[in-house]
Image (cartoon, rainbow, N blue to C red; front, side):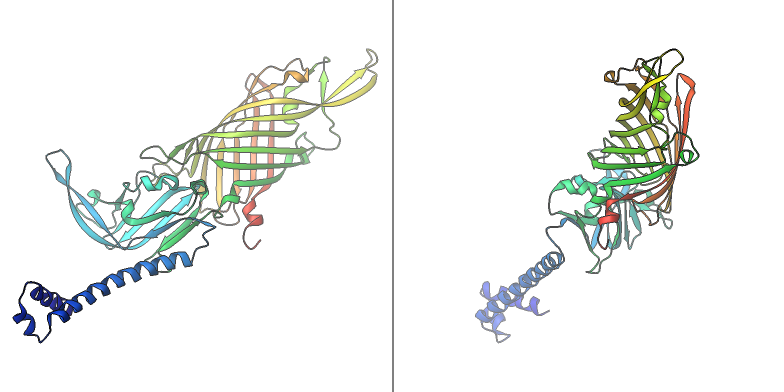
Length: 445
């Protein structure tokens, strides 16, 4: 009320109405000063608010570690699409205002799978597409649709825009964003309205090592008794197809493995001087080095069109080493003169469709049906070195000790079959444990 009065008196002074101004027994200079002080106070209040927010943000940040922040807004515009159109053929819209109560964000591998904005009107969520953090700044026009909780005749026409819900602020390099993973809920109170995305959030989770044994090997079959694998995964793209949850060329991973067999096994025997059983050679490989490149990676649909938690189509190459025993005989009675052992190498090119179902973040089941094209390198001097085609249907059951952890106990069944000769087949039944480096080197470990 006082500010209104001061403004009125100031107007009177400016326009030469001293009688009205003096009716309040205030000189014109005093009126002008009062108005000036009022304007300065308002400016100071705004400046203090901005300074407080900046100090709050920066005070809680280790700027060497934070790469971006997400902050929920206080209120937003709700649009209602009507049935009428304007002269350009576009549907007219009504505008409502709503207050934000909380915002839930679920991010996996740099992809925002779910965003739920709870307002005093109702809940809005992404129903059509996932949103990658790397290009978040260009996705502000994405719409969140109303989730019908109670009947509204206009429910299907209600929507809000992403950039009205949260404010995204990049702080450092974009290269760390694709590795971010978090599941958070933002609320209006000052302690929980802002989230810091850190470069250490989950980078180590993309480096995994596993140790396992083949149960058939323990029973005397020529399968690996002790086997070790390591994998490093690098994100190459997070931009999804329009209105969907499928990402092309999502990652590239590098892998390596070692196998230890029963001490009685020295190598696969050659026959007819320069031929070898391709099944035995493949089954008893001692090491492998290779890579896998993702062609398509499907995440859970924001508004479920299927219940797969993950599906992939990958291609890859493995460089495989396997030991052979080359025996020299003295005569036709096969009196052994000498046996030498050497390593031959194989090329393994494959394509792998894979589907995964998970339950409560602790249990998962995957089914893969890779097809391998395998040949022996010419330097091995093996006669039957041509390409052979193998199928390897694989089922894997996984248990995660902590919800959404990268470390797991797994049981794997794999059946290899030569597609041109059904008698050339073998199975693997493996039990082991896989751990990511963040579990070993993360905070508190």
